[in-house]
Image 1 (cartoon, one colour):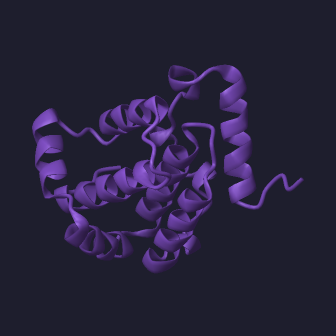
Image 2 (cartoon, rainbow, N blue to C red):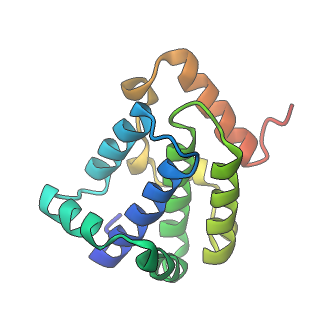
Amino acid sequence: MNYNFKEKQAIISVVMAMAQADGIIDPNELAYFEQLQELLRITPAELRSVTATVDNDFSLLGLIVLSQMDEQKKADVKKMLLQMMTSDSDLNEKELTLFNFICRVTGMDNAPDSIEGNSDLDYDPARIIDSKAAKALASAEKRLLGEGKN
């Protein structure tokens, strides 16, 4: 899916906020962020431009941009947030609170199931973490979406 510059800017701002939500930026989160850069086809110059404009004021504007996306793009962003949130295999309460807030204020909570979303955005958890952690990540995603309740 193609995203315009403002959409990429909004996505990067919420994904960066998710990575920072628990106060620790894990190496797996950095690795996922690099992979996300590839998946979104963000050039190094574009990334510098995007990150230079991401600040607290833009985060609010970014939520507005996200809320105006179509349902498929919202589902894609929801998936990106879930993957960032679980990339370190440590589902933190602050991350979950931020995820729920972003989904509620942007309308992403009504978007299609992010696990079933755009397969072009799928990433290989084994590229980032070992297979045991990859299983934990898949399990965490399912729990967040109300599937596979214990």
